[in-house]
Every structure is written in structure tokens, then in C-alpha cells.
Amino acid sequence: MTDPMQYLTPAWRDEAEKRLKSELSPERMNFITSSMSNIYRDCPDGSTRYLFFRFEKGEFAELLLGDGEPPAAEFKITGAYDTFAKISRAELGSQKALMTGKLKLKGNMVKALKLASIADRLNKVLSTIPAAY
Image (cartoon, rainbow, N blue to C red; front, side, top):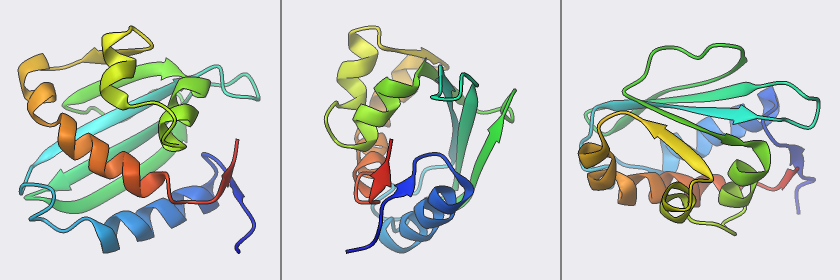
């Protein structure tokens, strides 16, 4: 088995991009065109990081990892690092995290609910990456 890589590092991001491109077909993504920024507060080093996803016609187009303010996105989801880590380990569903207030969403809520199953597919792929949190 591969050694776990540190969550939210450039190596983890590269692995996430590779898996998302190979495992999420435009058909599985319902040919969506959208973007989403996950804002991770209270990272282990005390910083705030972001993970930005963009899809064009269902094709995985971009995955950016950084500090500070993320690129503009259709949806902005903010939460604690620990909450996102639980979602990435498939211990917590993203919809439940939103509904219980563990995550905050900015964007069109009606569209977000329609895209919830797509977000679950994305999180399922990310949960397969051996990671150390």
C-alpha cells in the first residue's frame, strides 16, 4: 500500500487531480459547468487554505490549492479543517455537514441542492486517496 500523503499538500492535490480526471466522466458529472471553493479554516498550522474546483460541460477542468482568498467561484463553502477532513475520509456527508451548520454555503441554494449528488461523487473519489490528517 502507498504511504499516506499529507492532506491539502501539493502532492495530495496532484493525486486528487489525477483521480478526479480519470474517475469522473462528463456523463457522471451530468455535464455541469460550475465552480466551487472550499475554504478550510483552522488548518493544523493555524492557516486558512482553499481548494478550488472547476468543471466545464462535465469535464474536470481545474483544481487549485492555496492560502488566502480563493478565485471567484459559483459556490463558496466554508468550514473547519476537521469537518472537511471527515468528509474526505467519508465519515461525514457534505449534505449533513451543511444542514447541521458545520459548513456554510454561499451561492444559489436551489442549484446547490441539485448538485449535491455530484459533490458526493467528487468527495467519494477524494476519500480513496491515502492521506494523513
